[in-house]
Amino acid sequence: MAKKQFKAESKRLLDLMINSIYTNKEIFLRELISNASDALDKRHFLSLTDKEHAAQFVPEISIKADKEQRTLTVSDTGVGMNKEELEDNLGTIARSGSAKFMEENKDSKDLDIIGQFGVGFYSAFMVAKKITVNSLRLGETQGYLWTSEGADGYTVTESDKDSVGTTVTLYLREDTEDVKYSEYLDSFRIKTLVRKYSDYVRYPIHMDMEKSRLKEGTENEYETVTENETLNSMIPLWKRNKKDISKEDYNGFYASKFYDHTEPMKVLHYSVEGNLSYTALLYIPGEPPFDYYSPDYKGSLQLYSKGVLIMEDAKNILPDYFKFVRGIVDSDDISLNISREMLQEDAQLKAIAQSVTKKVKNALAEMLTKDREQYETFFKNFGLTLKYGIYNDYGIHKKDLEDLILFESSKDGKYVTLKEYTERMKEGQKEIYYAAGESKEKIEVLPQLEKVRSKGYEVLYFTDRVDEFMIRMMNDYQDHTFKSISQGDLDLDTEEEKKEKEELKKTNEPMLNAMKDALAGKVSDVRISTHLTDYPVCLTADEGISFEMEKTLRNVPNGGMGLKAAKILEVNPNHPLFETLKKIYEKDPSKLGKYAGLLYSQALLIEGFPIEDAVEYSRLVCEMMVDAAKE
Ligand code: ADP
Image (cartoon, rainbow, N blue to C red):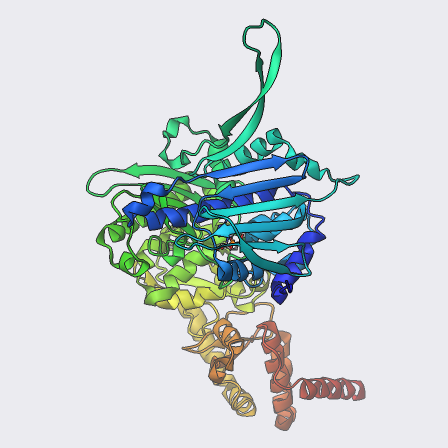
């Protein structure tokens, strides 16, 4: 029988498993049991519409350890796999990218990578040198045996399996100094593992357990008997009474269900009765899953009906902006044999979705008022998702989310909500001021911030790229519009200051115009600024595209079609350099262009833009140094 090769990606992952130094090898059992449980789910689902089939179906998982053969067997009465399925499912890894990720992280022992990925079946190669999978697919008569000794490939031959389901047999590796693989032949060890990882599997997991009991007719003579035991407790946690559930139970369930061993930050467990009835057990994770911000991230809200899993990533229940929520929603009102497409239109489900969304929203709002510290941690982890929620769909979710977002601000560096900001606005202030930049540190040195702050206004820091796009969708918050402090027309001046500025403008008009001409095509205007104290010049944006938006657009594939912010060069009349400019203009107006060019480049640098012509810039600086030495 010719060996078939694993697909490239699978082979790499397999290699990693075989040579794994991963200490948490025991999770292989959980992976095999969940595969068995999934197969039982599938068969259960099919049996719902087929009475005859239902009558023959006894859902069960059984585990056997054979100390002599050194084998551990996990059998199920699930749907089974036919020849093609054995080849397709066990020869390929469904989730692309997992091998790559594993490889990159192979040295980190503490990360539960295997668990997070649920690379599942292959993990058995951590403890087995050979694996066979004997399976008979529901509705078929010929069984097949898949055999593999690891990376060199696998074979599939006909088998005489005559009952529907799958039997996975692991031929355990020899014990070494460091690892005692034979521990997985010990029924008590297996029982502990099932309790730890698979206690809520809905199907009974049976195993023969050796027990010692008093020999009949004797007083103190014991004998060892074997008794078939159900190892798991089965009742889903969410069906149990809240007051009988401990924090450990909730966390344990979360860890085993979602392969996340960081403690969830919040648990919501409730039931709704009446017209609409459902039970929900929802978690807000303690940390974002490693792939949370990747496009491949799938939500993990599962939909059950009468305790049966109908949908793994029930996207129809929670909107994208709450995609961090994990958990289960179980409702008896939803018809079981309903297709994915029909489900989207299901009125009951829509009502449930609305109700669940509202619960999550209220829970977050409550956390914000009652436990600010916790909320801020939550926001650091998942706030971006809320912001995108406002931005997406043309802002229609604005009202639901606007009070849940936080910004750092110039006041005390602490997080502030829009509500708090507007409540403590300076008298007469109408607009919400913000400054956009890469980081808080970069914003705090922005020349424009000096002035606004000195006038006693609070400025929100927009450090996420989505922020400015988001407020454009929002338009306003409680009738207060948003205003960037980098926008040129910020009107903060007193009447006196305005007059002063007007005068300066008048007296320096020819020089300012000459600078503007020298910078034609680069700036739309050159103005006297009263925003500045320490800096000689700065750039502000004219109406339209802001600086941060320009930077973001530069990075999109087509370069944002070259869209740029219209820039205004503002000159500080109180800076010594202003006098120098005036002198140069009087002495030799032809030189002014060079100075204007240099100042413009400096202003670009301060704003975090690249200089347009670095060679020219360096040439000018050199020239000026040489000139300075001459004088
Ligand atoms: P995952 O379970 O995450 O999809 P696995 O590598 O564990 O990945 O399994 C690959 C596939 O093999 C499963 O999706 C399933 O289709 C099939 N499979 C594995 N074990 C069984 C089983 N006991 N019964 C039926 N199908 C199985």
